[in-house]
Length: 310
Image (cartoon, rainbow, N blue to C red; front, side, top):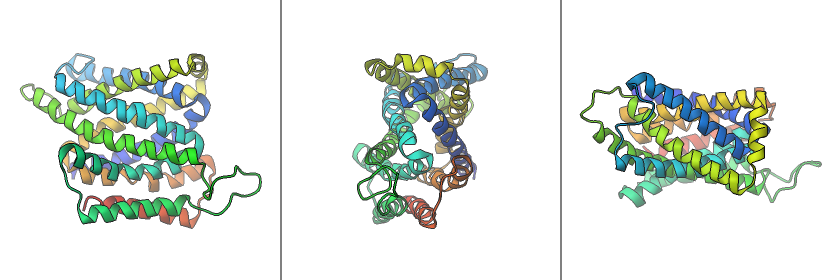
């Protein structure tokens, strides 16, 4: 039950990180925040490695590990997290995390294409149920007077696009990081290391890719001045620090650790509980109105994600 317990802890950490991530993204902007998160994460992970093995970098990782983990970082952090934090601004953390339940089918499709893993009939059913649950939560009648007009739904179309993009980045990035983690384990097989070394080292490589990606986006979008403003925002920086700690630094590292103790499908299913766990804190922190249909849709979406790996 070690892997399952770790996965449940990850779901709680990601729920907490999502709340702080929304608070920070609305103050600092998605691009600036993600550069800050990557820098803070590199410092945290480097300190952890230095404490564990006396070197602040993943020195046991071979070329294959670096290749797959960097690719995973570009997809998961560079693309996925940019979409995720952009969706926080547009539709909030609760709906953004609901879309993240699609990460499971995206991961399975990628594993089928990349690793030859076949989708079962139950997996296909799970995908349909997940999509139906999301639809129940986000579809509604026309917007109320004074609210932004949307096309047949109560969320802006751009929020849908970023939400789906975030799930795609996480799902594909998970498969790529799993391949990289296997190479990392082989390259460090002869060294006496703790189980957390590979997840922390792998996350650091992924974060490095995310840092360069977000910095590039920041420069070409001419928003470097926005970064300077974000760094001077004391409250925004405190939110960013907490979002980083609960997200890429501790949460992502533990998610990779969970994969070492249990099946990927079981871990992903437990970590998919975030859309349900986030309903209450989102209501308390952001005073968002939650309908019975939205709660039912979130529960159905998580059930669909669990069926995906039965």
